Image (cartoon, rainbow, N blue to C red; front, side):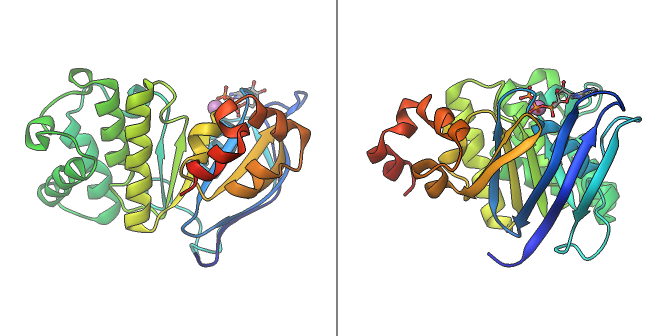
Length: 262
Ligand SMILES: Nc1ncnc2c1ncn2[C@@H]1O[C@H](COP(=O)(O)OP(=O)(O)OP(=O)(O)O)[C@@H](O)[C@H]1O
Ligand code: NI
């Protein structure tokens, strides 16, 4: 692992002037090439963080503090410098475009490829995310695929422009546990192979602990603690994190902590 890819300094987000902060005074460094889990219960501000990074906050939201991208050397270009995968692949896939068109689009637009070259790249990407019969799936529409396959396609589309950062927001939460494990393995493999930085947003500390390098725990708009998986699991700094771990019997049992982390 090398330098800092992204630094948040006292980052705060308010959706409306009179409301409570959705993020409050977050200081966090994200290391280039690391896999960082953002953990927290519903409403803790996880997706707000993802939206703030992507410049996808709604009109009227105010952002204070700083987001610095020393790993980029320029202002981030969404879609090019980072890709997104959301919980519901339906929301990131267009129902009236073929799978081939939507995976090719990012490569065409951001990498300056012709449609023909972009289609070739799209089919390679479908192979990389282990879609069976990628040549056939290129012609298919999203509704013709299973939820797990749609999520694989969404991942292919998210990495089509070779982003340095992949943000997965509850990307596996809508899937059954077997498919969930497959998608996690896929994401893990892709980011390792390409040296991407991964922000893995989830409410599931057990799922994240199995493969990320570091964990950042959020609660009520604040960063509670951040650290390497092993130290957060074995010596949480906050009572909240300790309670979160205790609620997962498999994480709270010490021998299994070691087993979960080869
Ligand atoms: N578009 C919006 N307008 C106003 N308030 C919002 C909006 N989106 C989120 N919020 C509020 O901001 C806070 C943080 O929400 P956020 O979606 O970031 O939480 P989260 O941790 O991603 O939760 P979940 O696990 O349910 O996805 C919540 O109180 C939420 O109600
Ligand atoms: Ni969310």
